[in-house]
Image (cartoon, rainbow, N blue to C red):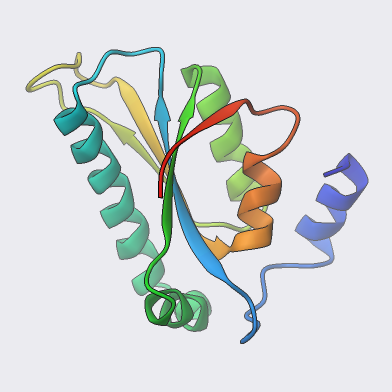
Length: 145
């Protein structure tokens, strides 16, 4: 997505509900920190629950939320190489009007307290999330759907 299109999307084309639109949530996990499979699953669950909590409580997103539920709550899990790129992606998603959750670990098991581990984005329009996660600035690796 070009910078001009990105600016237009932010200021001219806010997120609008379209009945024909497909919606999804993306969970982005840092690959530069070591986490077991169970820890990774738990961090993704934290991000998904927080995104769900935010969107279900926000009246302006109710139609998107309900469509996402009816569509089977699609979620995609991706890896990102480091915290800097994760925070840049979070910033860009927030600027685009998407729900985000940044998960910082409590430090009770595998990670140090306050370690940023996972980013949740959405639910939101599939095309908008794909534009953000498939950009030339973010190198993501698909894990699971």
